[in-house]
Image (tube, rainbow, N blue to C red; front, side, top):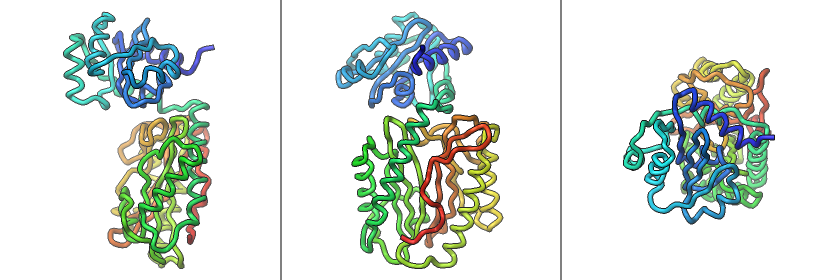
Amino acid sequence: MTTSTEQRVLRVRECLEAEGCDAFFSLSPPANAYLTGFHGSTSALIITASNTLFLCDFRYTEQARQQVAGFEVEEVSGTMESRVGERLKALGVEAAGFDPGVLSIAQMELLEAGFQGTFKALPDLVAGLRMIKSAEEIQKIRRASQLAESALAEVLPELKEGMLEREFAALLEYEFKRRGAEKPSFDSIVLFGARSSLPHGKPGDKPLERGDIVLIDCGCQAEGYCSDLTRTYIYGTIPPTWFKDIYSVTLTAQVAAVEAVRAGMAGRDVDAVARDIIREAGHGEHFGHGLGHGVGLEVHESPRLNMQAETVLEAGMVVTVEPGIYLPGRGGVRIEDLVVVTETGCEVLTRLPKELEQV
């Protein structure tokens, strides 16, 4: 029986043959994790029709020999890009495929100095494979989602008047790790009061006050896979009418979009379901970001759900559904679930209640 790594390498080789390339190389940590099982900050790999070579420096040699199966592990020193160029030349490669979205001009110059063959940009090779999650990957994402939700539920009662945004963010991220997460999927967003109108604001020194909006966008990484969720609350009092109104519109849009997710739907069409509801309520200008994005080894990856997204959803994709309404100087709402696309709809991984709650 072939392993998932062997199956992925086989698919890379099939793509290379179709593209007229005799090698693929990568210096991208997420791509390398997907293709080898290695989780480290610095590595490179080369795949040809008959070779699978994994390069790392001294810091990761022992780890690589434990995690990487099916690849020849070689410890190298110096600039990784230079070593890759040299290995491509030594392997007799004439045309090498790569993902142009993860390499800088400076990195390409180093690669070209060692390898004088042809480079071919293949931006969708590994990214395309990663969009469809295996049952094992979905289970890891489900575990990360459950872990993040349980941590948030645990610390939410710790909110108290005078607590700073950054204090609550630190408390939440500590709880992630206490429960077994490797790290947050991203720097947690915790915003109080009017600052909740900042879609990606950073937690600061705003103290919590009675009547404040509390917007929390968080996630954690478990076994290399990420989760992502957002909930918006009101602290200590009955919410004002204007806030209840935008919360209701956002929730209606979010639920409708989740119900629209299924294999065969284009990303832009799912986005339109939520966006039309928000626009018809008079808040089109207050929803300026895309509806969602893929989640996996990275918290933001393909496919995208936005106004331009032409990718057609397929069963096994994992995406967020997160519409929002943001009123500058007053406050905002975002509600986000993580879902697995199925042939007939989707499985919602996020279980925390979405109805407006006072905390």
